[in-house]
Amino acid sequence: MSRWSLHTWTRDGRSLRRAMPTLTVLAALLTTSAGVASGAAGAVERDVLGSGGLTQIELTSFEGDESVRPLTTSALRDAADVPGVRRVVADYTSALYAEEEGTYDLAGHTLTPGDELPFVDGEKGKARVAAEGLGPGDVVLPATAQGTGFASLLGRTVAFGYTKATSASSGTTAVIRLKVVALYDPSWQADGPDVAYLSEDTAALLAAARAGQEPETFRAREGARSAVVLVGHQRQVAAVTKSLQGDGFSAAPVSDRVRNLPGLFGVADLAMRIGVLVLAVGAVALGAVRAADSTRARVGQFAVLRILGSGRPELRRILLGEAVLSGGVAGLVGAVAGTGASVALAGPLSGLLGLPITRTDALPGPAWVAAALLLPAVGLAAGTLLGSREALRRDPYLTARAHA
Amino acid sequence: MKTPSPPAVVAEGLAFSYASGGGLTRADLTLEGGATAAVEGPSGSGKSTLLALLGLILSPAEGSLHITGTDTEALDVAERDLLRRRSIGIVLQDLGLLPFLNAWENVAAAFGPRLARHRGEARALLGDLGMEDLADSRVTELSGGQRQRIAVARAAVKQPALILADEPTSGLDPRTANSVMDALRACAERGAAVLLVTHDATVAVTCDQRHVLDGGVLSAARRQNAREEKGLG
Image 1: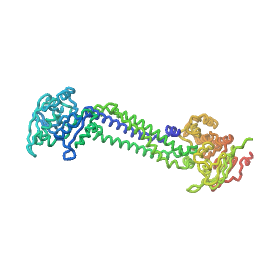
Image 2: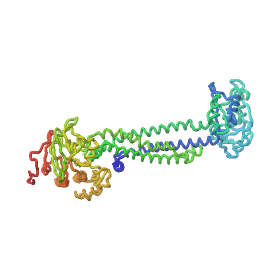
Image 3: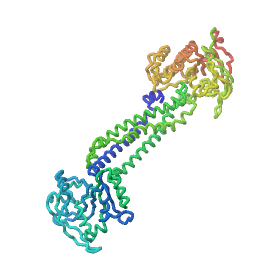
Image 4: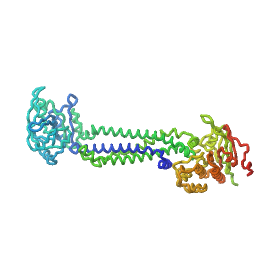
């Protein structure tokens, strides 16, 4: 960088500092997005892993895919026999209808160890379910579903309807009486909306009835949709996963699944990478255009500096110095503003996701901050080299006279 | 015995042509320190090309050029820039001032970007030219004559061996033109060789040497020594 850069950058309105506002906005957007994505991902990861996700492996069955082992009774027994496995809980899906009061239908799922339900009566509901576990006659309901409030049913034994197939194309409604042991916040929808959580045996009973089979037959032939394998310690997760995969199961550690953050967070990660690309390409393009404009406007000034004894390399250093100063300030201001914005957004985002997001969560990662800090300067400098070539080649004496 | 200083400029057979045509066909010139020389000629005759060659901005296609005894032919671009920075001051026609600097900073710019280091020299020279009060003014707020004197001050502040001035009095009223010429003559009295390009015969006649550039060829004017002509020699 030439010392002239300090004079031209601070005093000459035609210098490359005109590129600063755009680059500042780009850097701020990148940093804000990184902070928001980091906050959301961190909160979700902490929430899932905090509920025991670090010691859980998820098994999934894929109907029609013969390369994946179905989750039948014998398969689940094999899984339970793998060294390090403490327990296997299978999830069976079914449906429950209103039989006595209200009009609703609920999806039935097994309450698995990964389901850390936010009980509406807080620790009391949690303690009740954790201490006793869900018995065959118990159910946990959302506090409300389809306009029906279940608060009045808490602690009561209620009749629910369910479908019992009588042939391949017909069925009848049967009734099961279940005690409502707890209610959870309906905004928690890890298995979808309006889910009734049941014990494994009850969930299997209802799923089997819908298929027109006895529970034992259904479990032995059709199997569960998915299952959660609990291991003794998180250091055993990798070995147990490998062993299960070797036995033909589709097995993945819950921690991996969470950290890979599929869906929305996967898109967010992709968007971040695109953001970095946009910032880099934008800085180069802006540098090329601005440098071409700026050198064209200041060609007489550069000619004077040449006549005063500055060589072409020094003129290039002047422009590069302006680019580094403009990009550096834009990156710094953008990164600080973007970080501030993401921290400020932690509260609203927390409410939106229903998860606690701390200010620390919302700090963008160091790699993103480094990108926001450096890319404007590097990109602008690269663009400047491209954009200033033509102007710096001109004969300074004739240029200065022409601009006199 | 003291060794005599080499001439500020010795040019022999200088020639240069632009790809688009025009340029300089032949120029021979010797200018000692303390002397003033005027080059006259019509537009397009090669005056600017001659100044650019003597200012080491262009390299001659033919001929030789010595500046303060240094043969410039062997110098690379960086060395030519360095020699220009050390030994040559150039006054551009009318402008050539940096608009983002004030008057004294424009003068100090001759030394490079460390302006504050040369504040004293720059202000003192502006004082000599009667512009002390305007030293902190923005150059865009000054008159043409004031800006021209600043340009002279910038060319002279390093006390170079050679000062080249391109139409230094062009567009100025006689009184202002005289003050600019006084400033250039003061430089010569301090030992600099001053070569100026002018259309103004009243300016040319005050110089020690008078040359004419026509069709790209530099030759001595018919009445070569203006001082003799005026009976001053």
